[in-house]
Image (cartoon, rainbow, N blue to C red; front, side, top):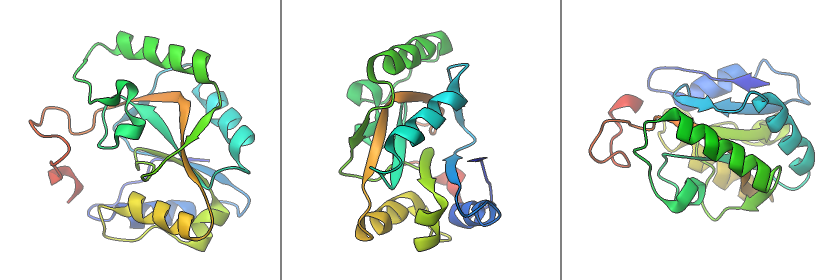
Length: 175
C-alpha cells in the first residue's frame, strides 16, 4: 500500500491517520510528496524489495539525490543536478547493479520513503508533531529488535528543500 499523507504541522499524525485504515497484514510504502520514482516499473521494484527483504528488515529506505542522511545519498553528497534525465540514468544503473539488495544503516531511514509492515507500525506508531518522526520511528523499531536498512537499487528524485542555501538546516516547510 502506498501512502503520501499530509497533515499541516503533524507529519506523524498524517502518517498514522493514513496507515490505521490499512489491513493488518499490509506492507506500506510511505513517501514524501516531493519525491519522484524514475523507473516505469517502480511498483514492481518496491514489491520485489519487500518480498526479498521483509524477514530481514523492519524499516527500509531508498537512495536519493538530496537528503540529510549520507547513507542514502547517491555519491555520498547532495546533488544540485536539475536534469531529470541524469537521475533516470542513475536510477536504472542502481537497479541493474543492486536490485533488491538492502544495506543495514547506522542512522534512520529518511521519511522521504520508508517501507515497513503495519505490524511494525502497530508496535510503535509515528510520533506526532515532531519533525524527527522518521528517526524516532526507526529508533523504536530497533529497540523492538528490528533492523533498518537502505535499498541500494531503489533511487528516487527528491526535491529536498530545493533552492535553499543550506537545505539540511532549512525546516520552514515542515511547520
